[in-house]
Picture: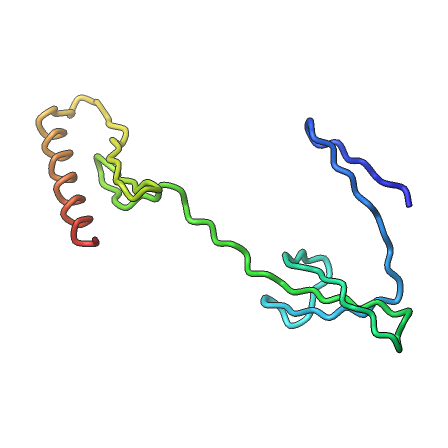
Length: 130
């Protein structure tokens, strides 16, 4: 059978098309009781051994896998008016300043006091979670 080549960026992928006729397919699904038309399922398709008495029938089993839940990278563990604190992959914490408005009512003392208070509250809360 002829191979089909697809060009994706600089990598070239080769697909080997095959058609299996008279196939028995057993499905083991987690999300639905029966496969729905047009819906994509993530899983593993396995070709089972052919029984001698049914030499011309092919048997396949599809097992739906659980999609991986991706944890947000560097999740925010504290969100305040002046700062946010994120947790890195190695378990350390990083404080980040939020954008500040420097309008006519801006006070350096009030801003510094607000930042200091939020750092204090955030760190007290995080130490208690350890």
